[in-house]
Length: 292
Ligand SMILES: C[S@@+](CC[C@H](N)C(=O)[O-])C[C@H]1O[C@@H](n2cnc3c(N)ncnc32)[C@H](O)[C@@H]1O
Image (cartoon, rainbow, N blue to C red):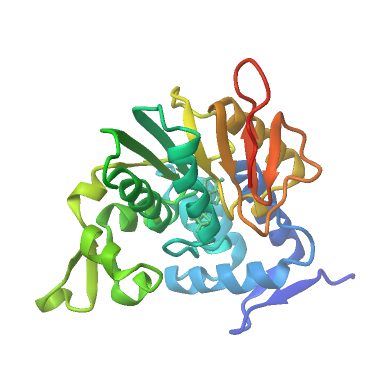
């Protein structure tokens, strides 16, 4: 009899090839996640931890539990274990510098700016957008303008953290002292060592759960969409579908930012390349002014 290939995590829990196939198929169907052969050890390590926490004896038992859980929570846990939620304030700072210039030079006449942080993780990205735009709006002589930020992610766990808006002090290393004073409340007593996002900033951000591979339900158009460090989880066909639907949500002249380690090469879309990780939808009635 031919023995099936298996992969073990650090504790010896075995992931059979068939189980890997089932899990990767489910992750692809529900989340567009691409788990190619070669990722078995990663799946065994990441899900193995979850199995032990929940007391399952095999990957098959865990898989059956995910399938039968009608709340959808087990599926969210699965995706949380297989992807990373890594993020930080002002991550890939050049996008924020670009945004600050665009708010003045490209969208100077827009009274209400609409920005979407898709795959926002625990909130550092949308709050950074809020700080950056508020900073521009508060400059002497600036017009009276508003910004509304939609922040979405598939994971209810990270969204709960994001809504809370409380982070350890070391998470704010990238922020200047002036921004800390303007946008954060310092914790005391039990909250010592933590900062909370001020209500004036938190009010600008609206959090919602959204799976990027499913049809988008919101109907408004955005001046800027951040969809960073999530594309890498999807295969080319899924990336293409997502980029085309994101493009349909952009105002003419609006920008799409992807992560700097991601590229839209091989993905067909109607956006103009502006500079690495930055694309733009054509303006009505002609070419956009493109600068980098
Ligand atoms: C590495 S974080 C990126 C966070 C932030 N955009 C940044 O660049 O710092 C990736 C996020 O994508 C989310 N994600 C993974 N698959 C998703 C999907 N199908 N739809 C929406 N979000 C997804 C994960 O939950 C995670 O929070």
